[in-house]
Image (cartoon, rainbow, N blue to C red; front, side, top):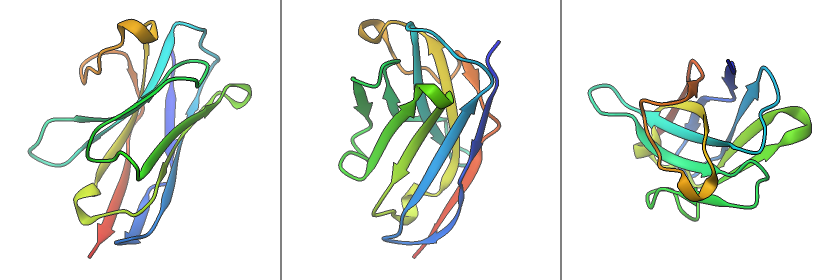
Amino acid sequence: QVQLVESGGGLVQAGGSLRLSCAQSRRTFSSYVMAWFRQVPGKEREFVAAISWGGGRTSYADSVKGRFTISRDLAKNTGYLQMNSLKPEDTAVYYCNTVQSAWSDYQPRADFGFWGQGTQVTVSS
């Protein structure tokens, strides 16, 4: 079992920035990918970004490319999502996720792996 705790959400004006954190209860090993998803009421949870265990590989949804940056600090068992140039359409509950998968095999799935409780991000226009 891996427990995940997100933090860093809040209310920000359009064009602003937030950094989300995801603290893991224990260290995971080289076969674990960390990802961020988001969800708005009435819609399915959607993929935002993912990072390989070592941090050398990343993947982003087209809607956030160039604005969001995913990273992780293995020594702290913590992942991050830096969100810049935020837009009102980025408003959602953001969830941290980790799955046991080689990077080459990774496919974002909203129904798999370990999840945090979510943190609300609200972007006002």
